[in-house]
Image 1: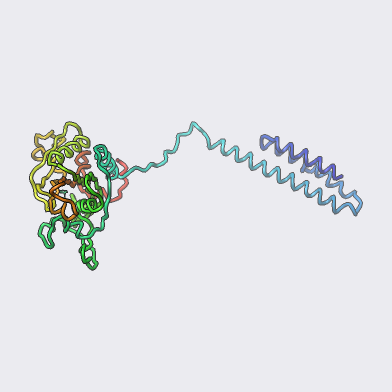
Image 2: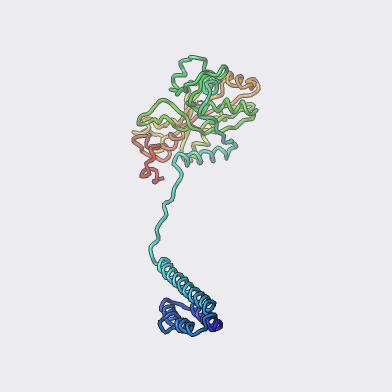
Length: 342
Ligand code: PHE
């Protein structure tokens, strides 16, 4: 009798394995477990056994039944799943586009600017946003309490001043990086410092946090011609070959002589229009590093000279793209309707 159950089990399992659809599976179920199914009949025969054989055969019979039922259930699940996946993978159905992120337009500009300067041998660095007065002002030739400091509309951090470095501030310009760079390395230096800067100003054309990119070049016989050449290379690479650049006299504590740097207007091609008034747009400050600044960093001004420039990332970005943003603060408002355009 044990053999009979084994045969039933093996037959059932191999048929279940071969079943290709639910209909075939139903037929198998009927054939073995139905009212006059093979297993049902064999179970009935158990009653005819002598009493001492009944417990053992009962267990064999039960096990056979369980194994067949399990196998049928498992196969049923498998067939159903297959049906569902066949249904889902309908290659004619229009796809669902996954939402794709993109870099913030200021990040994109920073990457582009970095590439341009790296091309002519500058090394990208970044220095602290929270900075000592020494780096942001004092070493840059701003004497204590000098009125020129007011132009930088600085955020001060409430903390006892350091005996040598003074108060802590949110750096109001990337020029603090000039001092850090000269402290860290000896000439020749070709630094590109791009970082966040902070000033107490918030209106349609100012955000309290913005970005600057600062160049510093120190070496023997570095002249204004090198500064003008670098400015011109940047202007042509970033804005386009047809754009011109110029420098105008200005004043900064840490450069002598100092300049404002301009790019010709892309709208009127330098002729003068509503946007630029006189044909030029300002991109930021520049100048030849002041001898006092070199001395403060232990560099001999008799042997070395250099130039520096500090320009606004948001400023050049807006000028390049011709983006008309009525309120500059939109850049940092995390509004996806605005940001996903770029
Ligand atoms: N740090 C100046 C500013 O924030 C710009 C500048 C940089 C000027 C380097 C001269 C040299 O306006």
